[in-house]
Each structure stands twice: as structure tokens, then as C-alpha cells.
Image (tube, rainbow, N blue to C red; front, top):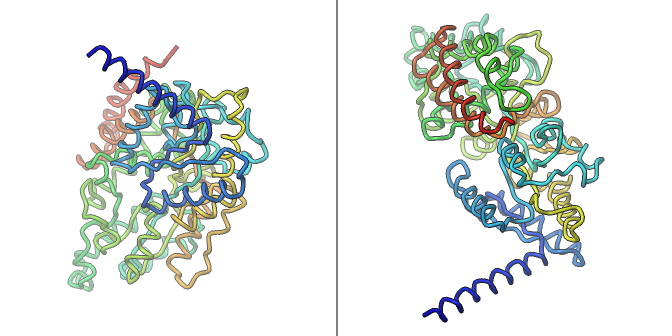
Length: 459
């Protein structure tokens, strides 16, 4: 029996050594996309091209893992590999998660090892997303954005003075107050004798879709992603620069004022914490706070819907800084790889290939991924035969070039994001409140929870 156990242990050791030896003969890349998804296939395409073009270099081996929920299935595999000291050379992380892995020393700093001219070619928001404590740890291979969409048929029913509020150009600024007035006018259509009995108005369940139903399903990140810019454009922030203090930031009076503006939509029944699936797509919401992923879905699956696009609104017309949502998954490198390692140079060369201009174009063509390199933003064609598509991407391109801002970085970001969604945004929406004192209470309670967690990371 002991002999069998010993043989089994030796077998495992040999297999383990064999696997490590094999890994040293390739650049292993783990991604959260399934092999069948366009995102998974696009990585494989670029790896195949690299291996064909550079036969004398270590080949890139892509391993795509089917993503579960908010990436939990993939993250479980990754964290198990980290615990076992058996990490891949390159792997994907969602932008806000980079800080916690960088703080733990799991991922490698890149800006002291890679070509600085190449790194400077990424958009400001993508560089910001991968930078922790002024050091670059992650390179985004795609980005995302948020705009406002409206159902043209419904908006055309509104009074002229309300329609005059809507910007004429998808690149023009407007405010949350403008957005609120238009949304209120949509609600009034339900009682307007001229329109209330029309099929299109009867179909409206809510004037605005905020997609907050994702929170109910556990998709907490949608709240911070969609709504942090309201806070930024009121000259406030979610947390301190070091990512470990929310007191004085998340519960700052300027933050509460910004959240009051959001609360008005729910207080006045213009939005709901629960809404029908794809409410905007199906004509059940007249307007939508819409992620860039809406556009290919509407183009391919809802071609009859006539919609228009506007920039994401800001709180004050006088605010001139960054204020639009941004962020997506990035590539990071195994922190155990040292610059002195013979393999490291080839790993970094493979990373540069996977994020260069040509790769960015492949990713856009395959998955409508927003380009992360400034030289490639204009590959987005806004002169197609589809005017709705053109207008939406015109708005997004403007934001990518000028106003996109990365979500806050923190080693406890997932906890902050979940608390923000559950303890502030969900409560505002469910209780239908825009009251300053009530929202201040929510933010104070959230700060107490978050800062208790943050103490574990403070020196």
C-alpha cells in the first residue's frame, strides 16, 4: 500500500515537472472568454498569426475558459492556479480587479520593462485603468463606453419646448437635469389624451432604463460603472487616491448632491430597480443609459427600432473634465517573471503583439470592441448605411477621445463596488428617495462598512 502511495506521489511529481517544463516552451495565456465566443476566437486568431510569423519564438498557447456569471468560473480557476504557484504567463483581469492583484504582488509591473513609446499609444482611460500607485500593471485590449439612447418615435411625440432640450448633435454636451426633463415629459405622454391610447405609448413601462435589474441578479458592477461619473462631474469622488478611504469622499455632501439627481428619477417613477428584459430594445422604455454593447445587439437583432444617440450627460454645464464611463478587461503578466528570466522578454513581446494596432482592429471587427489605441479609434466606421449605428458610434468615439475615465482603483474595489450597488444605489431606487438626509445616511453606513474592510490593508 505504501509502495502504491509512493508511486502515485512520484507520478504526480513527474507530471507536475513535465507540465512546468512544457510551459517553459510556450507563452501561456488564459482568458475569461469561451472558445466558441467571438472574443475567445479572436484571441486564438492573433495567437495563430504570431506563431506563424515568429516560428523561432516561444509559441503563444491560448486557454479560454467558459465565463460564469461576472467571470466567477474563470476567476475560481485563476485563483486556484495562483494558490498552487502554477500561474499562466499572461492572463486577463477586469480593469477594477487589477489593483488587488497588484497589491498582492501577483502581477508584474510593465512600464519599467516594455517599450514606453508603445505604451504611450493607449488611450488615457486605458492607461489610467491599468495604473496603480503610478505604476502600470495592466494593458486593456478593449474598452467600453456609455451613451444615452432614445426611441425616436416616442420622443417625436413630445412638445416642441421639450424636444428643444435634446442636443442636435451626438457630440454635444447636455446635463442630467435636461435628461430628467425629457424623461418626465415621456411619463406625461401616458396621460396625454392625444397619445395615451396609441400602441407605442401603452407599451411604455418606464421612461428610462437604467439596467439596475443587473444588481438584483448579482451584477453589482453596473452601478459603479454607470453612475460614478455623476459624482465626478459634481467635483467629488468615491474614494481617496490610495484607494483605501471612502470617508469624506463617498459620503461627501457633493457626492450626496449628485446621488440626489439620480434619486429624482426613481422618486418620480421615471426609472425602476426592476424592469423588463431589454426594456429599451422592446419599446418598454423610451430612453436608456446604454453600454456600447447595446449597439451591435440593436443593429443585428432589432433592426426595426429607430433610435437616436446622445452623449452621457454631466451634472454641470460648467464641468469640463473627464466624466464618461469606461473600462473593460485587460491583460496582465505573471508577477513571478523577473526581467532577468530568459523567458520574460518573449512573454512581453507576445503581450505587445496581443495589444498592438493590428490586434485592436481584429478585436473590433470580431467583437465590436472599442479600440484602446489612439491611432485606431477611427477604424470605427460612422459612415455606414445605418444612421442609428453611425450616430451611436459618433457619440462613443467622441467620449473615447475626450472624456472617458477609468473606474477608481483600490485593492478592495470589489467590496466597494458591491457595497455601493447594494447599500446606496439599490436603496435609493427601491425607496424612491432623493432626500439629502436619507441618502447621506446610506452613504455614511456604506462608508462604515467599507472603511472597516480597508483597515486590513492600511499600513
